[in-house]
Image (cartoon, rainbow, N blue to C red; front, side, top):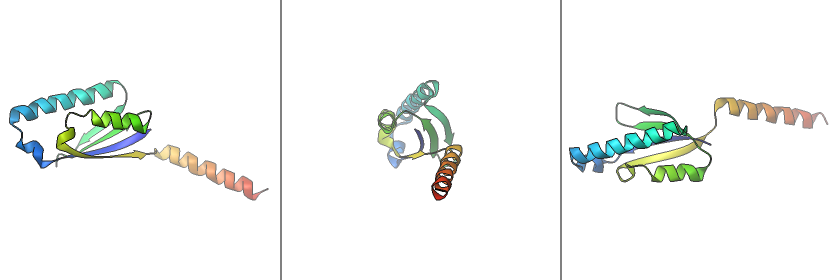
Length: 107
């Protein structure tokens, strides 16, 4: 299952000391590297405004929720995780549905 996760920082993160933010950032980097090596985190993009977008490929919704709950920034971010389908898979589903409809119409 593929998921798009969008993460933005809450204002509360800026109330942390620079030292604590550095610790949390190091933990977040380790978290991402762990899942990149495991093949579950496919891409991560950071925007100029600090928003982070990541693409995950995991076995289930339950696994994605578990991964989300392990994030070191959990208390300092708001995130939205949405499942998605690749364009190629969507085209295949559409073509299969068209073929089935055509076959049904010819009966």
